[in-house]
Image: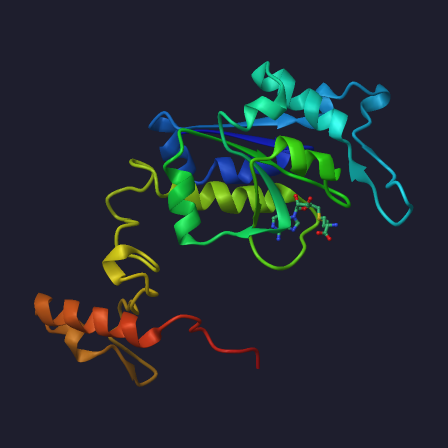
Length: 230
Ligand SMILES: C[S@@+](CC[C@H](N)C(=O)[O-])C[C@H]1O[C@@H](n2cnc3c(N)ncnc32)[C@H](O)[C@@H]1O
């Protein structure tokens, strides 16, 4: 898979690039690249944004700047580009990312992620260049970089070769193996700590019973487990 992230802050991804599954994905020929809008702006002094028509706070990422960056990368009119590859604008109001959407994205050979900043994109970017809009949750971040990392992280770990033997995406929260439910509890040594004992079944060595217990735990947890704030 090839993922291109359009951003004003490519350096924000330095930590992400060093993560084990991201390194492994690269070793398996999956590619992550960055395009800085500012490198392609047709405006002087590296300008990429402007004040909103109609007034109001903040700056808006210009449509001509996004157009120039997409053309520079793909050598095509961005209006046509979105019929050839997913061009996904990161936006708080977009389709909310979940495991099903991650699976859909992981089946694509290539993805383009557009990160916004400031007040967000000129609406014409969303209307004419983006094939869809994706949100990582119903809250507002300062920019699309963290959202892009969330998307790339979730997608890359679904790709063959990205996870090592010791980790697996086959049986974890929301997977088919668990009927879409949350994962069952894990424990490690010590078997008892402050009087909190690990369930006996996990120490029994009886694989069939352990499996049964784990599936039952996953079903019992149901969606939305995790408690509330104190
Ligand atoms: C400060 S936000 C703009 C918020 C916009 N004015 C609004 O009220 O919806 C700047 C950029 O961060 C990114 N962003 C912020 N929150 C996001 C979220 N929950 N999911 C995906 N992207 C997000 C988007 O790329 C957005 O264009």
